[in-house]
Figure 1 (cartoon, helix red, strand yellow):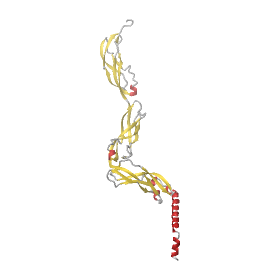
Figure 2 (tube, rainbow, N blue to C red):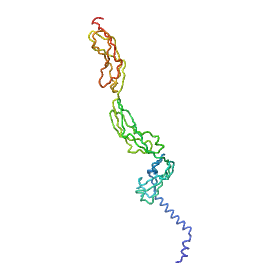
Figure 3 (cartoon, rainbow, N blue to C red):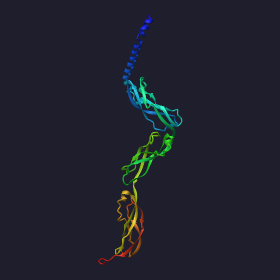
Figure 4 (cartoon, one colour):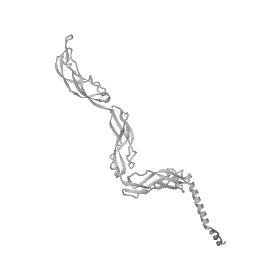
Length: 317
């Protein structure tokens, strides 16, 4: 073989031959790129820190991941096959830090070799603070009103406190946590409900299942009402005697709301004169006739001086 002639043939018109090869490579790559497709998915962003620190500023909980590759390989990939995370485990002091989002392929994605992955954003800033664990009491939150005439006497929460983990500066000012609103509308008897505890900040972690059992004790509303200057009946006088004038007194009564508001007070009070036998003045106790469901706390005055006179004979003025 004549190597000189072969070399001469190869190098003959070499600029054109090089351009042809470059053009062929470019056309192949362009065609290949035309066959590739893009797909965008949203995946959770995990934050990895050492145990003494926690995030103290908001950060994206999900990021956009762009998959580029052959259609037959990128569309079977779902969100669980891509893990996105920030690695801040080397930081051991509170402060502000920036870190690049890192990607780990799992499942279906791990088996795909020609897979381009980009993330948006590529870098994220996070503030870190000391971790604080703090027990706080729970308080119920209510909406609506009980049935008219009823009141909430007492309630219990079980548990009545929870422990929160969170950044020192934010958690130090938290004195209590509340429940989701408990609906009282139209209720007139004891009831229980399992309700969720409200987390006031996504940077806080409430230990447990974030639920509490609420139990309410409801009873009819007791009113204390004073009735002024109501008539006092004089009873028991024998024939031929009568009371001179009219008498009134005041009374304070305790009872359930709907009954005390409709109470007829015109015939409650009286003075018993059944032992009176002749005209004169008598100081006698004022008594009240009421159903046992009411309680009398005061009659004012407790005694009245009744003036008894002889009744006029029939036909005489």
